[in-house]
Image (cartoon, rainbow, N blue to C red; front, side):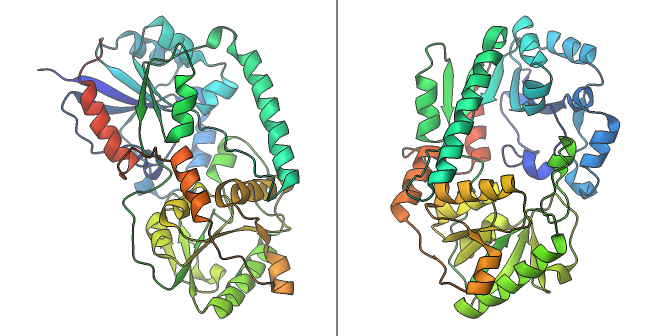
Length: 387
């Protein structure tokens, strides 16, 4: 029997590492052939795309992607989809926020069968740890809700299937009277295969010191630090002190989506690429800022310290404090304050808090601990053909 196609759709450039968080490039399905499509060339200039990949290793750039050069090509493609074909929307941030959601109009016009990832549910404020940050978050949430009201008009769209993770996502879906089918899957932000024996290491989760390809793509001129040399100097002093206080070695974990550093910038400490989840699972302590990779500590029950620095923009420091209070139930710290005061660090974990966060936002209690990509393959196999 001839197979239908499962198309993985994104509206902006991305790398293999990010794709494979959700689906393996070599995935084989009984009822679908797998293909990747992108509208990045419609949404961005050649220069924007080139700059995005400027510091990305070539082996991290996936070549087998159908890239539509213009809107007409995209329309013809959607119009010619077969009845049993399925389009999985992995990302449409740009189209939704800057291109007036032209893709939703086309999905409706050509009756495209789609799977959407659910919007990530809002994590409750934590007034017990930070009143100011909690108030800022509530105000920001209110502003977003108002904006949504103005965006809804004729752009309302309900996919055939919605994929979500955790109890909160499922609860939001079930409250929608027009919702169709929900697929409950463990979050792609955690590697549930990583349960390692703890070793005497502290993992620092790097967020790319010099460059952010996402900020470059969105033409955001905000610098991660106003003085990179001072930040790195203070960071290495912090590492020295924490190694002395804990008798543990700090290692550096970096994403493989960026080109490699010179080891000297982290005081000749060992640097690993593409192994963040594994290293976190083996760590006694994890250091970072506000990377999504830090979510892994919740599953592995590892203490986390989120680090601010006075050369960071206010927005970034607020994001770091928000991450720490809402997910780890503790305040972040300024690197400089610890260097000069050397107050005792809070290396505890609130296991009950971790468990609630895990089940509310990352994996429903009834699900088996397995990775998003593996569970997704199982769920796709159940779909067979779409009528």
